[in-house]
Image (cartoon, rainbow, N blue to C red):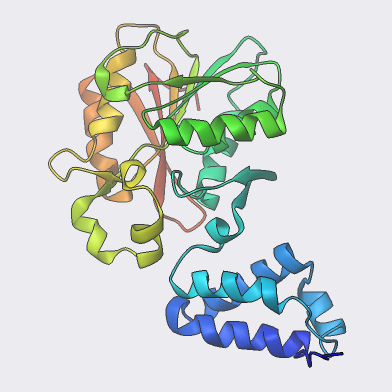
Length: 288
């Protein structure tokens, strides 16, 4: 019988960090290795310490994953899922990986949802993460999720089917730049549209540029507020909803100026990293 001399768990863990560090940097390499070992092999930090001398028996599973990570592929795509507001969300190359900052947008929005009759729209839904989180928090509310990308909507619908019953969220194929809206008028909108200027791409990490959909990331430099303006203009003729945007800090003041031109109140909020990341927009004066 052929006997395999496995390396110890601790040795393999350290080797992973070492291999990934040139690609990701030492701090991120450690975070990725921790995430991979915990999610894929059930080995959290405590287990790595307490069982570190035991043989690691998952080399055949680990090496293909490690190879992908060495090519700058995000660990969430390698595993096929990410967590958002406590929910496990399927991720593919067709959708953005949910960011922790976007969870903060949900925290801002949920305090304003006070009725089961509230109609909520998630525009540019992507993986559906915001719509899914809001449905989890407010299961009886009517939630509409729209996107121009059919592959993204396929992912979002699959996520909704996994987490909730079929039809729990109303997914719609829609181009927000079309200037039309044939669905129920929402009371509240959450929206994380493309907001990165093409001129910023040179400063971005290769894992984002190579593995996440550019359609969901980038906007032309000539009009970086294109999608924000489209959403706002679309609902100006209607009873105006409360809008929660995730924004690019570079264009925050320009968004405030645009809102002022249309007699809208725009309140900016910083994220946990102290970057101006969110805008709360309403017609008239917001009550403090």
